[in-house]
Length: 171
Image (spheres, helix red, strand yellow):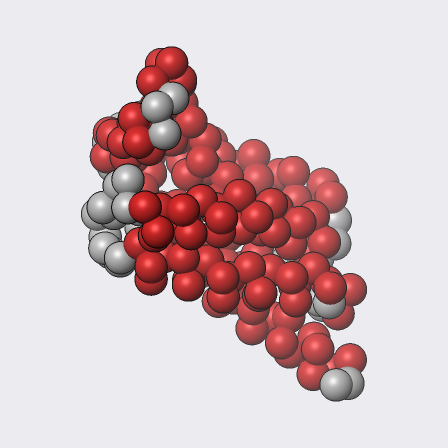
């Protein structure tokens, strides 16, 4: 595959994953209490009740990270670091969703808040596909024609986080 073709694949994956991460993060951030309850469901399912005092903060931070990754993917800001963030996200959530699909401790993953309900097995396979996309983005990040400035990555992430905190607060 030529460098031009790899660049086109990277751009398509950045747009696709970026839109999904943006949608997922925003769908949950506009309902912070729903995200809080879903995190509580997970903590209860895994008998981690001692962490429930942190569940609201964890829910909001998770949504901010997800939305920020989506924003950085779409804008093509610092492709290597963003692809690493996506991979970390997928390395954590893909095995978790496999466990949830097999044992069904929660009936809905809450991946897209109340906006879109998908089964636990659909969630797992979605994550497998997104993991593969994340690996491709990481392996071919140098073919991105987007902005590789760390300062822009930090500024975009900070403003994205601030925006989402304000949206969460006023919901």
